[in-house]
Image 1: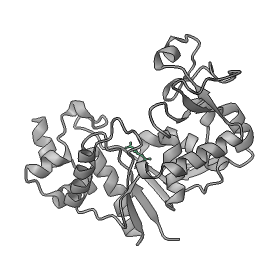
Image 2: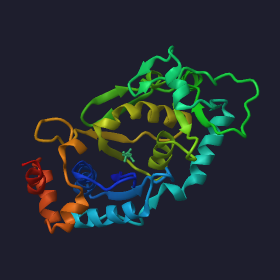
Image 3: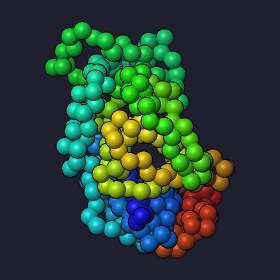
Length: 282
Ligand code: GLU
């Protein structure tokens, strides 16, 4: 098997050190196995994605010395694949249109909570005659999906966490096609990882919970399950996950300030925060 990993940033902002760390993990894992490394731009969210962020992402990765194989892929050019997956799930009776706004959901006092916040209370699950001319998203009927999907052993293997049994029920009726975008993160990433032949999904542990849903979608759509490597997140000097409040410069700012990208990559590989970052803290 040829190892194939990907780095899949959303071009909704400039990359920061946490992204560099994650890209390095995915790149180096593939290279150490003589495998392939793909760059996939997750620009499904047309309102927040910007071409100038895509340009910066390419320049940042090149500056770090990371070379991807083949053409860069863009989710915005792969919508037919997501449509086909949605049609299939719809045909299985597993999707329903939902008209609720965020405020509706928040106002529903009965809404139980899952790992990602308020769970959808199911208001639109059994509408008699939904009016599809009104803005709506499409949700997965989790209970029904589990009846079908759990005919298969729903587990996945993570290089750090070991075997994990998927528990997607805890996330409720997740959105698979958004009101404002033709697919959701969960759907697009699962379809793409399979379609692109990704063998190892290397990403931050902040996306670990999402994998419960991805594993169920793989079962429903007859897709292979890759190996996962949910890596630890880069932390700031106070030991907490690196975030905006740490004031870390973007990769672009470091690049434009004349910092050495290859040296930065080496520091990150050694688990050290780079000099530019340390200076920003002082
Ligand atoms: N596009 C996602 C993000 O930027 C990452 C997707 C993934 O690695 O699964 O957070």
